[in-house]
Length: 195
Ligand SMILES: Cc1cc2nc3c(=O)[nH]c(=O)nc-3n(C[C@H](O)[C@H](O)[C@H](O)COP(=O)(O)O)c2cc1C
Image (tube, rainbow, N blue to C red; front, side, top):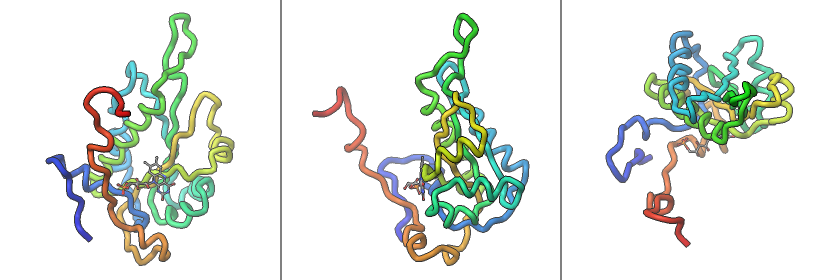
């Protein structure tokens, strides 16, 4: 497998982050997990409103099976080997209006996305991998996790140390490699949107 090649020089961390499905299930020390969430904490957000919320379970704790059961079957099929499963939420009303009432932020999801990628990059820097997932039963997750109306469930992710691809089924194993990207010419434009 050819290693990822950037078209322009970037910090290797961006290429080292990828989304494996085989994890070794080893425990993540509390201090490491706290550091991973700390990186998310320092993400930028509109008006510093910090709308991200994280709900997590550790492999084998009292919430683990319940958290796992909120993923679609495909994701359950591999995520069970990870060490931590996180639901990433955003508060749609993270600010306070002049009259003291909660105020909507247009960018609550965007800001939560910034926090998620900070988390993922910090995990990579520490020798872990994070794998994002939108394959969730969102309705069930809202009920099971007691998510208030004002919060949006954005996605989930697992975190862990990479494992032996041999634990995966054939379909999963075939995808167990870092992916490539479109060239910049397809998504970066000088000036207005191209016609
Ligand atoms: C928001 C989000 C949702 C995703 N949902 C899933 C998912 O449900 N199941 C899955 O196997 N991978 C999922 N992925 C992983 C993507 O397929 C992966 O990030 C993408 O193919 C790029 O590969 P890389 O992360 O290895 O660079 C998700 C990633 C993100 C960021």
